[in-house]
Length: 238
Image 1 (spheres, helix red, strand yellow):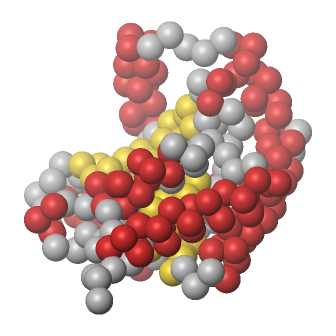
Image 2 (cartoon, rainbow, N blue to C red; image 1 turned 180 degrees about the vertical axis):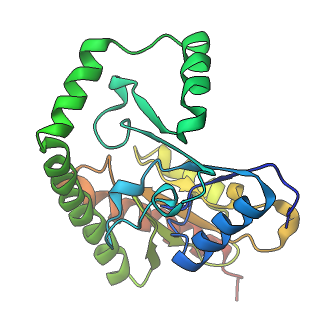
Image 3 (cartoon, rainbow, N blue to C red; image 1 turned 135 degrees about the horizontal axis):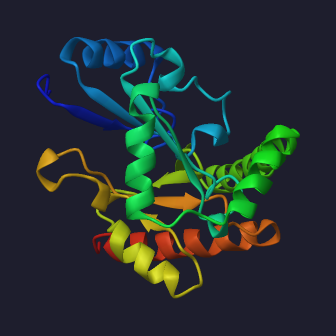
């Protein structure tokens, strides 16, 4: 759509909000475009390591032989946001410029914390932690999916969320607002769409990572009741 662009910012590992993964063929095409146009690709791999339904797809940077990909990531999702540590894997020719820029723009995280994270990874604890978190998140995702599907809801996996489609005529914004009054926190899907695109549909994104295991069933019941109540109010009188 923009062949003369100087830069493309992409999230190929997991696109928000649906969790879609960029195919290998599209990844190769993107790298070929960058090489031919002398352009840059910034790969935001914010959730690439937390694929719940499949093995993590290879990073764009790992496929890039022409040094056009700048790979950025964070430990906020995989370890803890309190660490406040992110990382950049840049082509060697850009490393010094990135180091200078970062030194000017932001204070570095505590060196002790950085060294602790490095040791955590070097000793294999990070990969074991990821495997454990994926098992936990996958179990929660499956539980939410199964409960809502048993209620005849239309649901699909969306990365670290479950996407729940709503019946026509219901406002996902209003239902999300009503659900918050019941201590639930679904996010409406319609604000993600460009209003003029004509592709928007009502739906809710249900977060998996912060779900409480022994409260999932009750939360699904309360949300379903909100949807049913709204649906019955929208039915025309006979």
